[in-house]
Figure 1 (cartoon, rainbow, N blue to C red):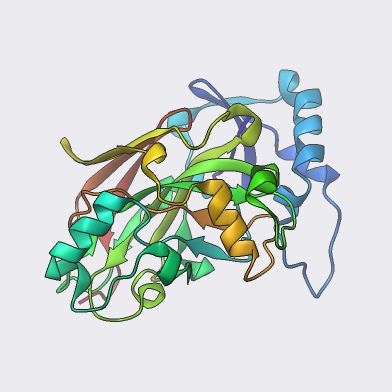
Figure 2 (figure 1 turned 30 degrees about the horizontal axis):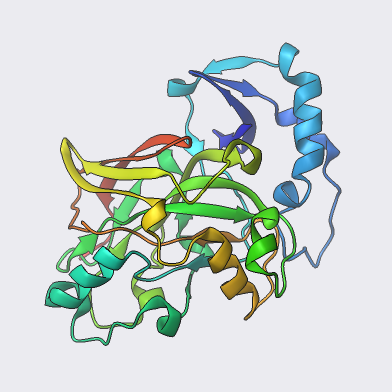
Length: 289
């Protein structure tokens, strides 16, 4: 299934060029009181949601996909986890370009580890990117995103993909500079996730998906997840050895070579094989300098 969140937090099933409004499927979710759970309730109960969608989709309203506003498919991630320099050619380009590394030591991912982005940075396709620090370089980074579907703690690489609910396209927007990664990558709208969640059963091999991004008509990044240094399973094993992963946690797997600046007015077109594509408008944040 391709499941989306759209307009005023409605739930949709993407069917070709249409969205089937299956919001009533949310009635199967348990009710929670304060303190709220650490996980995303929809992702934690995705099997129940999928079953209910199958029961109601035939009679549910259909809307043209191009007429809806797509939000991030996960509403309440507990963590956004990201992998730095996880493609060798991107590692090489960062090492060579002072505008990318700013004299900060760049380690191989096995030494650098993972980093966290603020959950408040997350937006969907239709919300766009609002750039801050316009006097500095802001870059696009297209990535495969994995959505954790079950609580994972010290899981093995062999079992790791069993803990994935689905996959999305991700844009890890980055302000260049000497500060820590998580600081420069956490402004609001700097984690675009979408356009929908493609459930894991539709992706037989996340380690062999073509991905690319264009700015306008200019192709900037093009690669394949087969070039990842640490694949999805290895990243889940690595992350879950340090902290528990919960349903709805978001894992950005890293970006290939070709990162480059973006500016207000740009249109980003990102595509990942079998996951679809999304067009993301770039603007200046209110009060940005």
